[in-house]
Image 1 (cartoon, rainbow, N blue to C red):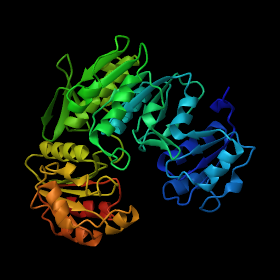
Image 2: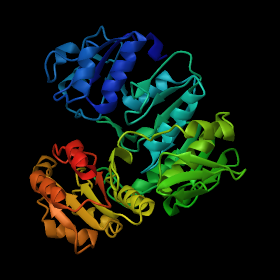
Image 3: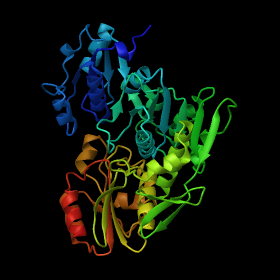
Image 4: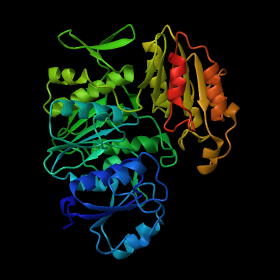
Length: 461
């Protein structure tokens, strides 16, 4: 019988510097486990947070001697490779090796597991659910892919929480387990927010990618619940109500009104509930979260009461600065569907203001010439559309050079501005006319260190 996480007191994390992995290290340390870890590169904020807890490795790199027979288990992150010397050492010793999702499942075997999946929206939906549960002082554990306001960690594992809310990523579990993460959590309540082809390096065709969500839907157990976006064509293909022992619940955008750039929900009693997020995609996210909360015993009026104080997940349409006639937002959007949803929502929210929007191509898929055509007409909403990428990232990902004209052609927008130098990008933005204009910066990177706070201060002055 395999050991349960409660009895796993000596744990070593391979690739401990990752966003979710360093949060797991901190959560396990908080729980009382003896945690060690290694990584060949550790950046902020992981570095400072691990150091503060006494968990920062003495030096970066891989050290097989850290992996000994005295360990109860090893947890390996996706950043590690299959030939990682510490992983090979753990295999040679016959130690129990977990991927992140395997460990989370083991830690929550006795809990009700809610898994939020989808190409887009899953972080926001998960954040909404956590906010509502916390507002009403419910006990819960969680694993989410972004730092949330009011939560000091992205992972929480306790003994007594009856439920766990998990953001279910479709990417691979580990370098030695090629299954999508969200297949391993074994959900009781599953949700699919939308499907739009991504991760071309792992799922080379749209059919391959969609198949992972079909399998997730099929994994919904007897007496389980599957919640899905009923207006998404790709989701419709994988959520056909085929199992009479499963409850299927479809949702759409929440009814609402927009007044002076502010959005309010309309309840069944025709009451208006002002909210701090906006856009069709967020109205769908709210409906999704409401359905999950309903399954967890949260009544409608209690959901709306909590929602009024929800400010959104970090970097998901996050307000940087607001001025008299302009606002600056940043967003994590990078995939085509996310880009289109975010840019369109922003323009609709402020229809009388000029919109300057910048996208950084940063991921393997977004920089891949075979995938770029997926961006056609996804960036039509802004008045000024700008794309930035760093040629050195292409070299690092072993991708061929990407001519700016090829990017312009892929987006099918002749006036698209393409930059490959962050200083030139900053100069271009500084030169724009900002009265009655908004700026939207979208990336999963940093625009190579562009000082967005300084830029926002200038724009909104």
